[in-house]
Length: 233
Image 1 (cartoon, one colour):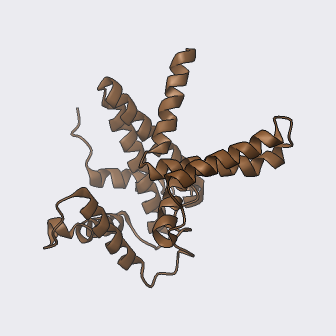
Image 2 (cartoon, rainbow, N blue to C red; image 1 turned 90 degrees about the vertical axis):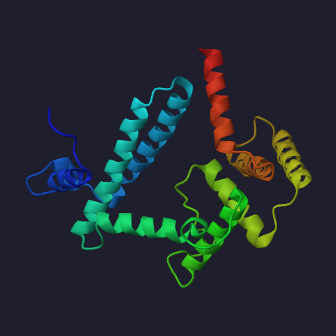
Image 3 (tube, rainbow, N blue to C red; image 1 turned 90 degrees about the horizontal axis):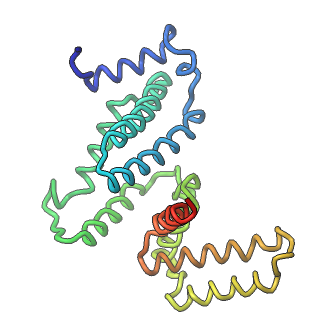
């Protein structure tokens, strides 16, 4: 039985797969073509974590983490071929970021609570983005590719911080009532297009209420779906 593969050997395997004598499928891949793969693998890691929490079985988590690493290395290899950067640059950049954003560990900044850590993190992140032009606006830097509930929570949180426009618990409840009332007025026979606006407002208002209550809405809905499945099956 051979010794376990090393990190360097794994990088070489991916390089070989992308080479002229490698795998036709791997050679055809681009950053864009691999986007769905990365999103699917990330979701499967989340599923593996759920399975681990319920059963204590960690083997699936190990496998799925490997699949995410494969995606990262594939993107880095493609970028290397394009003359942009290599996997070593990816590792170095994230290492520098972790040191830079944890001055309470690697520097002389005091942070005794998680909230203080997050405040420092946000401030450092803000300084890092100064002078960069790849982001159009602060709210549009939140990826549109995120699940809608997760994106809503992040946009609402940032909008509240920047513009203080998201209101109170009572405001969120009133927005829910208002949207629900409009839906009720339209009725179930209403044109689907007419329902789109108030339904969107209702979902956004519920997201805002979750944000105000500091509740993880994506996880709440996922758990309720699981409960529904168990009920039916």
